[in-house]
Amino acid sequence: MKKLVFVMAAAMLILGACTPQTDKNKNESTADNGNAAIENIMTRTSIRQYKDQPVEQEKVDILLKAAMAAPTAVNLQPWHFIVITDKPTIDLLSGRQPTNAPLLIAVCGDTDKTTMPDGKTKLPDFWVEDVSAATENLLLAAHALGLGAVWTGVYPAMERVAEVANVLNCPQNIVPMAVVRIGYPDEAPEPKDKFKEENISYNKFGGKKQ
Image 1 (cartoon, one colour):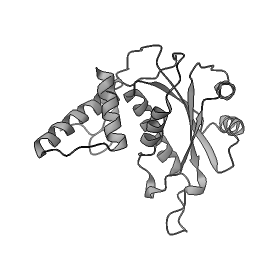
Image 2 (cartoon, helix red, strand yellow):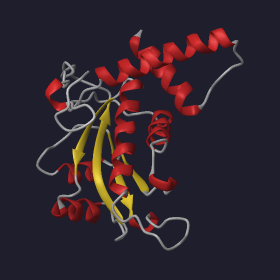
Image 3 (cartoon, one colour):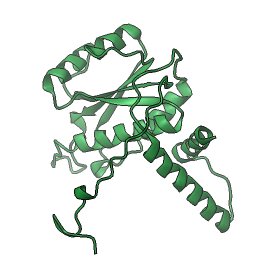
Image 4 (cartoon, helix red, strand yellow):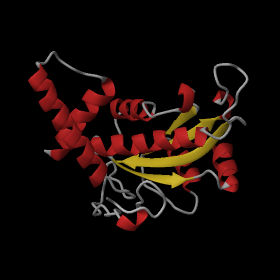
């Protein structure tokens, strides 16, 4: 039932599906979607074992739309996504950590898209933030669709960046930041509770809650 709620919420929020509603129904719908979104965030966890089942193209499309709905500095959208289903390529990218994932998505930064609309001002490093936000959106959308995923880091380990770029034939301006492994889960690890009061300050570093 929860998976069904997540899929419906993802389809409505990502694809923009909606129907005319009264104000009361709108408020109730917003609350329901909000609860589903929070639960989706809190229950997501990294999945590393997958069933022998391909991911449908319809779901791949939703994942990519979700990723590209991420916030981006000055709306530059400095990202590029490489969808990989070819088994030999998956094996090459997996290196010393083999995977049975049927789908990889390499989330890359496009350094040619780091100039502001004035044509002069450059934001050379903000692509990392934008692409990171897109990657998190991708992970959450995967969970909402009943898929499992894990973020495997590439950038800023430049040796790894070069390896992945070489396998994927990336031009110089396309910088692989992460490779996300995706598939139908064949394991069910418990989500970790990462909330820690010591990692929070109020108003200034070390400030206490009033």
